[in-house]
Image 1 (cartoon, helix red, strand yellow):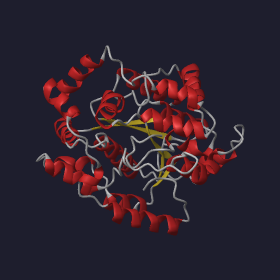
Image 2 (cartoon, one colour):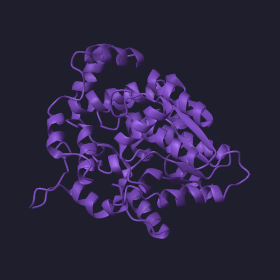
Image 3 (cartoon, helix red, strand yellow):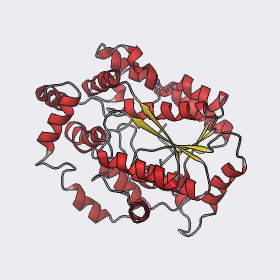
Length: 365
């Protein structure tokens, strides 16, 4: 990690606060014998043992990416009845769609597609882009959470399996990606661009909704990949060999908008290169070499020869001119602290929840 996180801190040995926190609070959760499967077997076995009359045991959010695909495979191999839920926000790459269809068919999964109203979603996305904050993907992130909770509620399922994992995502500065569930923050961004708040209703999943789903409906989100020594490269290889799964070119490249945000918008506008966070997590785990990471980071994350055409595609789909999109990218960067937010309130709520549930803090929130 580097000073692209404006609030990064370094100790006397030159180690940053993110890596120190990872090593102190998270490493023991991941330091296992690679052949040890008992934690995963227990996690998924307990779900199967407590099977209800519902048609499905678990809901798995499917993007067509490595992590979510591998979670679906693990769940199916353990005999769970899986409902694969895909959020269609209009930005799917053909490869991602093909990956999902292939896994659903081969694993005999249930399937549900949640399609966002494009005109509403596009307007919300543009408002977040114009706000010049790193959280340009918050509308999608929060819509995914809402779609999973709604699907679980509809089908009487109380377990959601997430592909989120500490192995490749354990280090992520709050300045790079502030809490997507802070509705006050999202509303402030929408108001700034005169975007009607009602357009956000179908994708909103703030504190109220989370309390309802987690406390009233008793829905829990579990992270199977944290129960094993997860090696993303090996998981990808297994998916390719066993299911004909195909790679989409870059981390989160299964979505063209996400690819644009993470490989161009954030590096150019905020100096944020998401590869730093991924490499840092993998270096802490001994899965990646620091010198090799620095060599890769010396090259831009986007294809210089193709970026102009990609910008034209993004602009057209968002109903912007190319000049408007370029002006958005070139505008001075802002951060979540530049907008009204409920960081303090949510922090107290999350701390209280962790205390009552006996859980440790392993995230920035």
